[in-house]
Image (cartoon, rainbow, N blue to C red; front, side, top):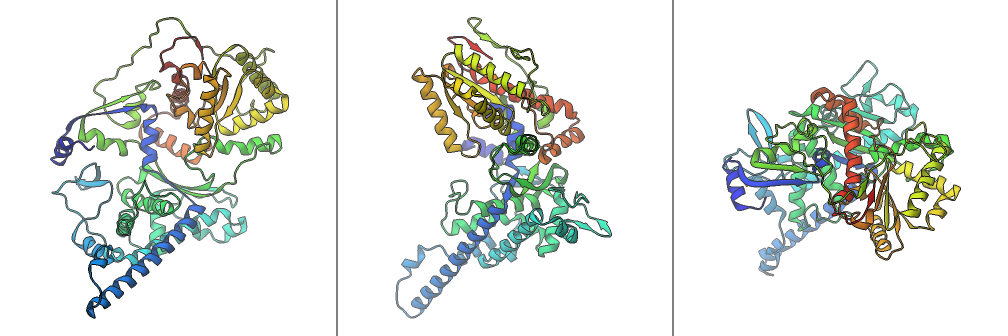
Length: 554
């Protein structure tokens, strides 16, 4: 994107000759949708409120310094050189009046519709920042109203059932009719899904804020932080203003896309885990059923109220690149079947080709094991997961393989909750003690990325020193994306327990599957199978990417 020729050609509305290559593009649709999705928690809103207080104090301090400097200059005392180095709020205000603001993502108008644009065009008509948020102190009050409204929406999840019935007007339901919000009449509901247009309508009515001003929330906050010489996002300290930026980002995305792309987004309010970077909406909620069956054997962090702005159409983020660059290449070892990706990304490919794998020797042995040594069927279906015979057979299979396979063994589970439940049962059965006779046991951490990185380094060290290791990971987790960390002798055997099928009860997953079926004409059953198979292929492909000099088993 920094290529000068590419920038010049795109500014002239011509396609660039630069070649854009997306490697490991098997999950490109998920990445594109996550780029235009934002998640905020109740704790995030509390942090945003504290950040607003810091900004308000800084504004008061800057104004006091400006007044003192002006007073000294009027009295002929002091020098103006000391104050010239301090960014002035008045200078920022004048800049917002005279020049267009940087949105971070540019827009262009075509056929009376607003579309994404990677580069700015000098001939475009820029909208000035609304006057009610140009002043820094006015913008702080503007943000405070937005944050308080979001808090009210999340507070609904933690209120008692009786309070929910008495305050239906707060969550989009009325006694004499329903709004556009998709709410249930059951007072015990734990989630709400609605359209962005409905959510924005209630936001503007409750706060009295204009939808036009909401579009500039994120860009206006960035301008204020730059004025205060605070490093811009994403290099910003996550403990300082990242939560406030997330709130502003959600608000701007909501206001910018509600008119032209209302059906391509949804708003989900539910209780979920705080670590939004983990694929919690895929599988974490299944632990509630398992807790009931096993007497609460899982210990997890408490869920918190969460507001999620979810993108359902991956083409919104990819289409600007396809328009601006003449050659775009998508490639991945686990990109199969190829015919699905043009449908998901909504483009017509010029060329599609799958290259067969070739080996110098027959050194890879793929196999499917459906029954244990006692001939009892093994399955990761929810109905069979709590069966002691299934748990025991999986553990015995793992012990037998680790006793004869050298170096590293990587084991993928369909979900974090199932991995934890199996490990607890194996510990009670003594299977983990048998595994440690042959290899050291390592575990992927659910919430701590730094701890997972350290664990992975220790696992590689155990394989390098000849002790051997077994690494328990999740098919949709972070470790499965480390294509170069589990190759060579670090993945002498790759074991996948079951298929990593999406958690069907997740509101986000349901919304995305329904969108594919309604607008992209992809049947839900085909999408479930396609996604599960590509996730399993991704886990197995880590070993195939490396030059195999010895035998490997899948």
